[in-house]
Image (tube, rainbow, N blue to C red; front, top):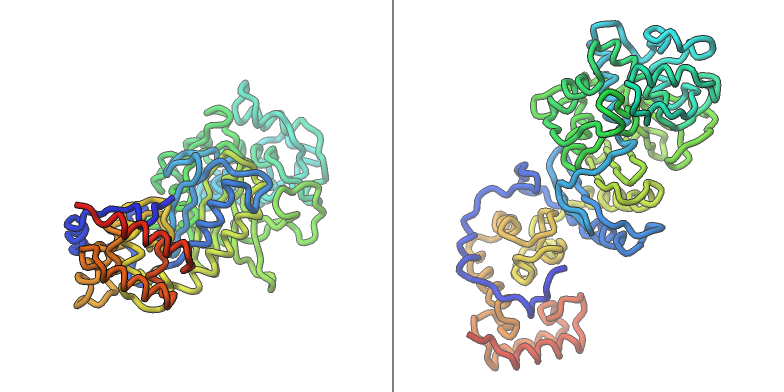
Length: 483
């Protein structure tokens, strides 16, 4: 958490040299356009709250949270025991990655392959009632196949696992019931190997992770020859968010195309029959499912979001209306524990991007002035910082990048003098008027501001001007500025 202003001493010369900084960049290095500023303090409050059990059944030990808008990182912070770029098991969020690979094969494969391809066309052991099962059904949980041990069997390869699945009895007639699971996708993965003419991991690397530069995203369960198609990947927030942003853009990002727009549209089109009976679902009692991905709808019934969600909390979403992609990377909790929390995070993000802030306007009063610089200077160099404390780029830091945000919109004629004033105040809590010395005039100025309940009199920065501020300033004044 950031220190209070009274505890901060600053190197004024090093700060003033930062006035010549160049273009501001996001946490991921993508240039941020001037005007793209969003106060996401509520997102931070929700994230911090989850660490102590707020809006969850059980406290979340740690995670990374990343938000992008139009492909630009607007928020990226790690919380609790997690570090930035930490790799986590994606679990069932893997289904969306696998769904993308299946769609890639429908576009181009050595053997004819489509969502309506039957498993039995490649694996004749899917016979009798199972002979009608399609890739579409397999990747939307309506194939009727029950759970088996094949996905986690280290003694067989993917083809052998498919034969185990084919020998198991049906739980439901194909196409009649939504039963969430992994066996049908696993069998479909075996068909994909045969249609694609290569092992699953090779296809995955060549068609998805390789082109997108997702070097940390790979199948780690169960074995290299029997990858768990519906839940075996590990990944990190930046890579999964890039993948989802690629889908949001219709299958292309930074000049690299992994899917045609029509294929992406199929992924985000409901593949399950409306009203299909639900035998089991982990997501909001829903059966609204595309190709390997959950679909959310607005009040008018239009798809407005797509969600990839894993059993231990890995979660990524696309907000189509607001052009937002989010990634919540962790494997330290459970999906049911954080779904409600992430609904709140998504709502807070939506509100923030629909009401952009003036870049650098810490107190959100619609103007850039000394009060905003004062907030930044007070927490300059700290981590765990809010927008209201000077973090204007969503990385939890108050630093030269944030100073550059203010500088680009500030009155150039007064910026240097106002920043000097703010840094003087930050360097010495007793220097109330920012003239680089603590004297009787500072005490007079403070008492006047305190009597008027002015914002500068909020010495302890708790959002209220009260007796504790008077006490804090009295202590600071008594200590003076030192050398």
